[in-house]
Every structure is written in structure tokens, then in C-alpha cells.
Length: 206
Image 1 (tube, rainbow, N blue to C red):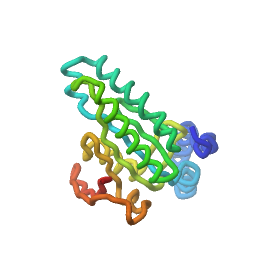
Image 2: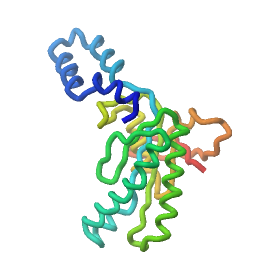
Image 3: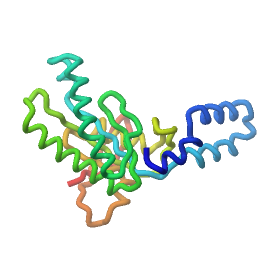
Image 4: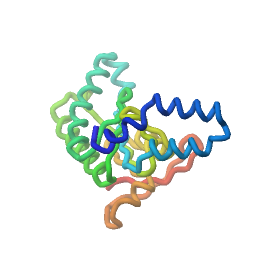
């Protein structure tokens, strides 16, 4: 956990959030005041990286769940040190997904590129059925951070959709907010997609 998250951990615990939400229910006349308190103490403006591993349905069907778990473990062993070396912190790991926070989009992009480079190197040594592939979405904005273990917000939803639903193996996709944080000369390609009726404009890192 980085210094920023550690400093806020005492304020943004699950227990405190639950207590504040209960207070809204018990005192609806204080909803605005308490909502502002939640947003002030739980919200951080950060870059978000969501990594989703590819090909697991096929791997599980062919090789079984242990192979599935082994590949997830291999990915975490590779990705987490890279994320930390680029200034990021792993907030949560769910199944074959990683959710990480960075101070800047540039840090998140650097981590994503290095992870992809390392995967390409490792895959040369692995049999075709055991190779590791990842798709990555990167966002930026106000994120409600719950302790050091969960994330909420519109930008979290958008970034997750890019990493899990839109991106294919080897792709790094940025939300519009994330792209706006990078220099104009940074090379990306604008694309559009529709997911669950939601029209998305995103940017693919070249």
C-alpha cells in the first residue's frame, strides 16, 4: 500500500462507510451532509488499471481448474512486481482480474506496456496451451476507494468494461478521461464500441 492510501485507510474503512450509510437511512434529513463527508474522505483522483486474463474458459475445459489457478498465480507473480515498480498498488484481485491504482496515467501505461513485454518474453518458453495473455483497461478520475481492498465509481465501471469486455489479448485501452491526461503527441487510435447498450469511446495504445 502506498503512502497516500495508507494515510487515508483509517478514514475509508468498510466499517465507517457502513456506519455513514446507516446514518443516512436513520437521518435522511442529513443525506447531503453525510454524502459530502463520504465523497470527501473516500474519494481519490487516481489512474486505474484493470487487467483481465484471456483464454481461461478454454484452458479450464481442456486442462482443469488447477491449470486455471496456476496460470492466475503465474500472472500475479509477473504483474504485481511490475505494477509496484511503476508506482502502482494492487487494490484487489478477483479471479483472473487485477485492479490497481496509480498517481498518473503515464505510470499506468508504463506498467501495462511492461507487463505485455514480459508476457511476450515468457510465452516463448511456454507450450501453446499454457501461454499467458492479458487485456488491460486504463482510466482516470474520481474513484471511491474503500480501504485498500475495493473500488467504486463511473470510471471504475468504464475501465472494467474496456479491460474485460472490449480489449482482446495484448491490447491496452484508455478511457477518454485517461487519454486526456497524456500528451497530445502520445500515439493512440480512437475507437468506438457498444456494451450492454452503452456507447463507449475509447483509445487504443499504439
